[in-house]
Length: 253
Image (cartoon, rainbow, N blue to C red):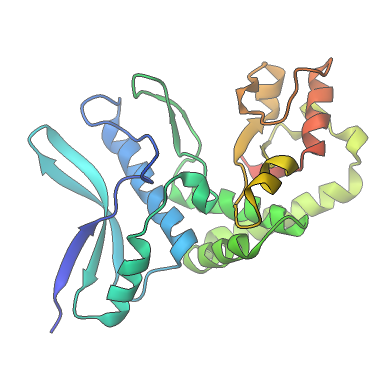
């Protein structure tokens, strides 16, 4: 006989900031995005859930209002469900543990400054492309391979879109040499940088640094997204070239 139970998995990884009920503007929209991205990140780490096991963004009533949490809905009598729950309840400490960026960036008042992903499908697409680029360029590990396989299994449509983008990127890599990589050329793309020394210091099991920078942000001087040192270069074009030397990865904007 089925014994359906519900367990909280938390709205975001344990060490990450999240939307605050009664504080964050458009809380419910923001919190739902975070919870569904958390679901995608858990799947990247632990694999898709077995049949009948659900992970949902659930609205819960509280004295202070209705808050959103990611919950597992499972059958306690099902051994496969219990085994998967034991894995997934280990959770994540940070988004980057699963190769994700924070879906929302906050200021010190818990207000949204910028959205990284439009929805959890976009997040899955971005992460597949980023980790595939890392693998293609010879800097992957079994951790990335596992995350890619899990996301591809759960999000087949996004995996197909990722493959189309990767083919486009490969074509551009063949026709454009480093001397052509200037700020204006890649405005439609978002770049994610994985500094080699940063990764080596953390060992092969680390998924990589996920710092994003767009060409527009380079032009407007928003350098906070760049992990590599650009303070010693004379122009923004030189800064972008330096970042390419630090293993720049394409990710769809």
